Amino acid sequence: MLQKALDFLVESRRETKRLQEALKEQMEMTRELTEVVAKQELTVHEMGKQMVKIKKNMAEKLQRVREQIETIVSNAAEEPQRSYPGVI
Image: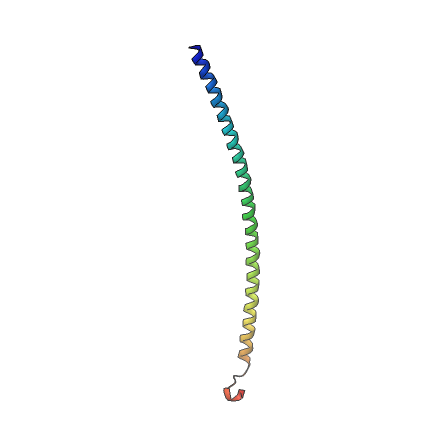
């Protein structure tokens, strides 16, 4: 009976050590994944800032194009219409 109890304690100790190792590995993996998530969040934040810059840049370019089109249309409206024979 005493031997069975000792065997049980030995086996229990082995199992406890195995579980401690597994827990240690999982904690390390959790730490690594937390670092990865932090890096991804930083990347997403940086991409968001880049998108804001790109959007602002595109809006400025679009405004310049609109102004150029308005100038072209305005100049075309001010010039007299030429007929084909007048071009020759």
